[in-house]
Image (cartoon, rainbow, N blue to C red; front, side):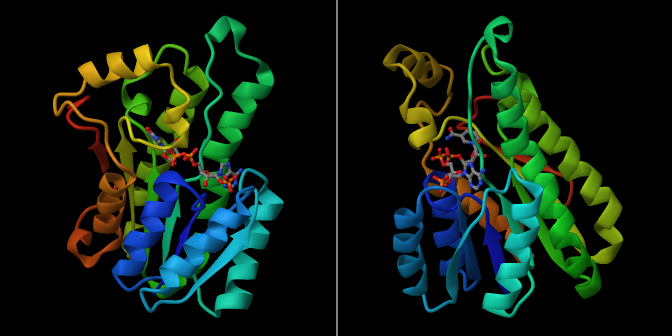
Length: 244
Ligand code: NAP
């Protein structure tokens, strides 16, 4: 069975690709800028005895997202049965100072890209009467966050998108769920100031920062048969940060 992970070259997407491969999924690895890292990951994934290929595409651009699905079919001769919408960026600032470009870039990458990929994946899934859509949200999509109006809105949007797809396509054998990470150790959080990290750490009941693998295991659950009676849910992987 073939899984596509968007933004798989680094961080959480990378860990998801590895976890899926460990569980016998063939993996289409999407990247945008980090080709070298994507190639390295591809070799690592193949070591698990599954098929893997890398595909360059800026998924925030509809034409490129549509082309991505065509390329996957041509190269891997298979339809995408598991779609993990993971590609994401931040452009943090207070609302008053937030540039229009920063709002749009975040909405395009985190929300519109997920819609484009779902739109491209769903026809084949519906025909096959089988599909697993897993969208990477964030706890701030549930709670909001000062300085992240764009990011929080994109992640709240992805939760609405997930639930709507879950309702629309349940009878076609497609489940759609979201994983909402809290604070995870990746390049995205590396840039935060030490005092900000410390404050976040103090708000986590389990008193530790999560690893990409913690999120990957939750994604794997939604990709597996173990979750076949679960759809439209949001699973927070956050050390107890939100509990809502
Ligand atoms: P990261 O380390 O910064 O990696 C981001 C990934 O997204 C990279 O592989 C990057 O690929 C890819 N990407 C960005 N823009 C893209 C585009 N237009 N098209 C294709 N790929 C694109 O981030 P991360 O922490 O792993 O985050 C992964 C997801 O988890 C995101 O959706 C993020 O919002 C979410 N999340 C993260 C945290 C956290 O604490 N880290 C918390 C909550 C939610 P290239 O380098 O190849 O461009």
